[in-house]
Length: 138
Image (tube, rainbow, N blue to C red):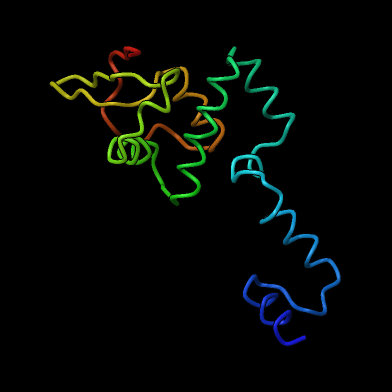
């Protein structure tokens, strides 16, 4: 029983907790992504309808949010920097854009529509950066 007790403790539980393994399986072995645990099915339906998203757009939004969560990022532009650094913009063909913030500041990011959705999902604000003047999908 020592190995099981050690296992439970390493995940913040105890061997005496009869529900520990069910919770562990739900969290770590369910096959769901961090986003699936973060967004309920009713919220998912609401977002898809409200933002008129295709299935591909929704999957890409979820992937974008997963990077934010899984990398423990604090600001949305950090996700853009991460995707750029990893050379992964090809995975975001439906939501990516080249964004013009004025004063010659042109960056890879996501469209205004998808930015608004990401902020709503993550309950974050746009931050204090330069306002977006133009976004162009590519």
